[in-house]
Length: 114
Image 1 (cartoon, one colour):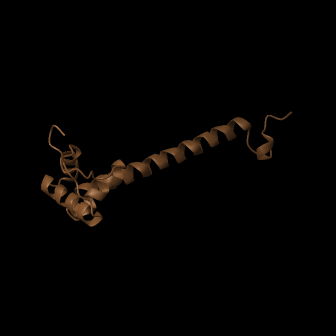
Image 2 (tube, rainbow, N blue to C red; image 1 turned 45 degrees about the vertical axis):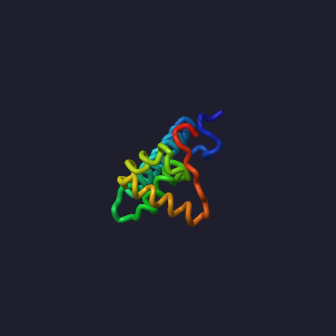
Image 3 (tube, helix red, strand yellow; image 1 turned 60 degrees about the vertical axis):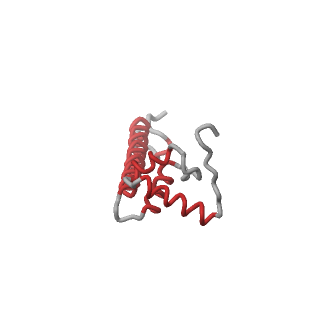
């Protein structure tokens, strides 16, 4: 029996074919990781870019984190959103109020004790 793989018609030894397949897959994974990293880098740039409106920057934050802007104006994540997007808390609250108004949502924010 030949040491060559029948899959490759005897042209390439099986061990070389396996090595090439592993290297090819490794290269594919590296390219995918690079593409994901670039996409994430661009998303972070969009978060803070003054070329985008507060609505766009908050939308970028939502896509990046897979979360939605909360309805409650007292929600603790709002300060984090403001920091991440380099917006003021007032800008985040304005966008929140605008969204709530467009959706016809009336939000009652209970005090500390509910």
